[in-house]
Image 1 (cartoon, rainbow, N blue to C red):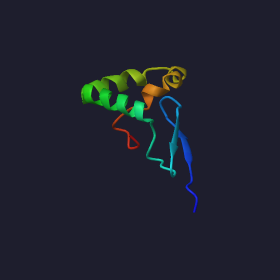
Image 2: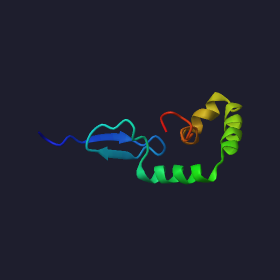
Image 3: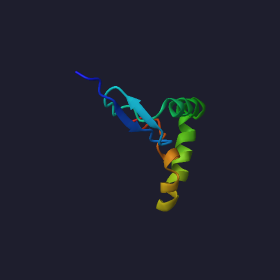
Image 4: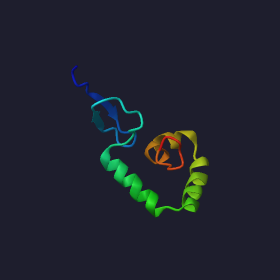
Length: 79
């Protein structure tokens, strides 16, 4: 049986992630994962709530342009 190579895109930077098998739980490349973990250590729940309140008042077009920051919520079930 041949080793199957799977490629996925990082949700934050669109870098190609090469894996030995499909792994939907891997959403971010190594660099983005480190950055996200650093942000999570710095931000408190109150910070995340304030950010979410600000994000909610953005127009939908502005939200789409801010996709990277909209995808790093650690409280998301897919995080």
